[in-house]
Image 1 (cartoon, one colour):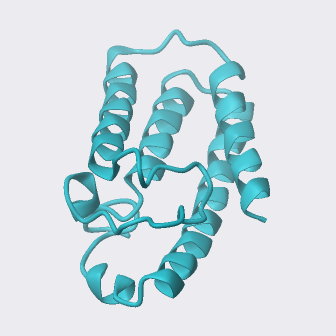
Image 2 (cartoon, rainbow, N blue to C red; image 1 turned 120 degrees about the vertical axis):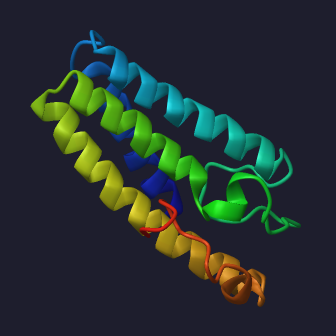
Image 3 (tube, rainbow, N blue to C red; image 1 turned 180 degrees about the vertical axis):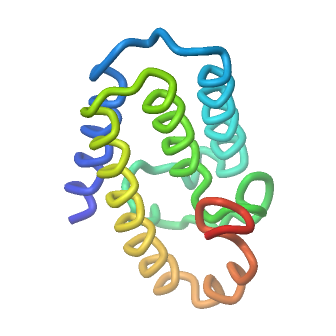
Length: 140
């Protein structure tokens, strides 16, 4: 199941990238850049030791609670959605809209699996994550 979710996520990203033009207005590029910035912030906050594309925690992982992870539990997923929204709104196509909606569903499924696995591995995970949004601070 975890590998299937990753395959679905990257398939959605491929459709978002290639299902239309990249001729976008400046504000769409700004939103896209914000998505890249969130990804970089999350990557540095997470560290190489904890990084994995699978929703399964790496052996010996630690809970990240600083940087982007202080505000969001899954900032890399947020970055994917920001970039996808920028492309879908800035240069829309039916394929992009379907891919963005599908990607949202896939990422929510990944979140549920990942959080269950983190909770099983780190008994303090549910308590430490209280008040930390999953994807968008102040919303969810």
